[in-house]
Length: 107
Image 1 (spheres, helix red, strand yellow):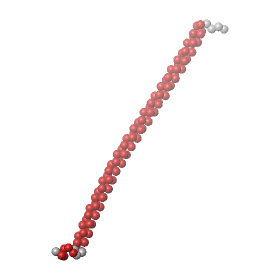
Image 2: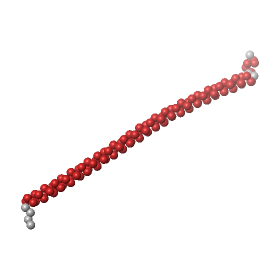
Image 3: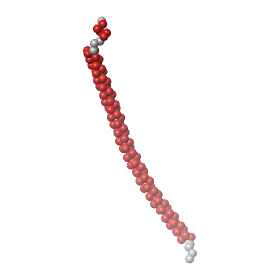
Image 4: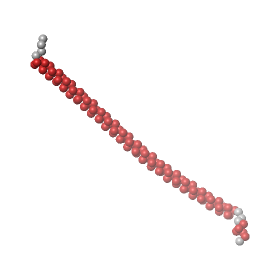
């Protein structure tokens, strides 16, 4: 059984075609995988973007609340300071009205 050059060429051509088809199939499969990976990364990036926007809104809300709390705290301190001033004035007036001032009597 000897193979002629024609038979050998036919077998080589068939093997080359099989290899070519296999490589094409592998390339298509790899492209599908790559496309799915890209879509997966794009989805992940989209999710991260939404998370960052939400976190930004939360941080802005915290800042706003913190500023509002600071203003309330300052207002409360101002009210307390005014009350203390009024109490001191009242005590001074009461002290002046209740006790004989030695210096006022000598004059």
